[in-house]
Length: 518
Image (tube, rainbow, N blue to C red; front, side, top):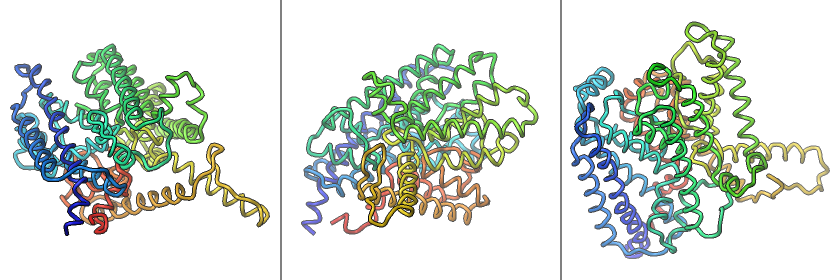
């Protein structure tokens, strides 16, 4: 028992330190509250943020005092990763739970989920926090236009923090040489990616600098297009993080539906498309571009496949939309192209924005829906903020298939090597890819079965719902109101799926492995 306690001490000590840092982040919406109180929209009490901050700091301090920190083993760092994300979501849910919602919001929620709608259950609040930190974008909230601005800011901030990872931010602000390598490896994508410079701290600093610069660029672009300051911040946070939360129930459709207020709504959509692609490309690619290597945009098999999927997917969706177009916008080719490109980008990058609902009938048909479901699963590039299986793994498995065909037609004694971008792939990498792929499929199938058993939705909708959760997308073929009405067991399944997908399976599975706790 003593050995077990001592082996777990660094895990809980690091989780405690993480919670103490996290306490300061929860206070950030108070600045928004200060500047918006007294306006036309109801605000919330500062206690909505002060209480969770106090809880996080107290819990972190206790853990930090009781347990002695030390160097982390790989399995321990994965436990820190999983427990850190669970703890951050548990505390990050409190502002939603403690807030008393305005009457306009309560009426909308009451019409969807019943009850008085003036408060959010802790399960729904935890779901919203987990969807934020994992940049999933599935929401349990409605009536967003009437929400307190500071709460909307907190909601978007959770996705911005989760985009590059909570632990990477932890490394940035509280660098610890003993634990940094293990923590970074536990949270970062489980595929081989180069670092821009030697040293974990230098890598994290460069990544967060690029991330912040892209965020600022999107904010400036939205302001120039006439979007309000706070809305620009919220959208920039959730675009570069490929998260998908917006401060509007209509998502990005909000702007096109109000052309008198937003005459540049087309420019807004094209800007967000560029922002989504920026978040979905490896940040190593961004670093190489900054260093003057333009060929970084096409010189690897992964990024070439990414652009190919984007072009082919847009073409298929556009053709499907034009061939089946009826009603509003049927003759507007530019709108149909822009909508097709936007939704293809939103699903391929796993952002989840919408200018048209993919669950509503009448605009996207069978071909489009199959393209969207495929892109939910694949995701974008490794080393990006996107979720999903990652195109690197798709490319690796495609090369494996080609290699097997090549072996079948070559002499038995010929040397067979699996090459990706002229580099030999180690068997360990291929085994890791296979394990993640199997885990991904198993989670999606299990969650789809649970959804179909406990809800009124059919096979396609149920499968898309769990795919959206595990791949950290957001939209699916279940409408937003239907997601809010899902049974508690299904919501819990989706929470587990979101976390497992964001951390790429292994850290979450270790939570249920007895040997990992010894």
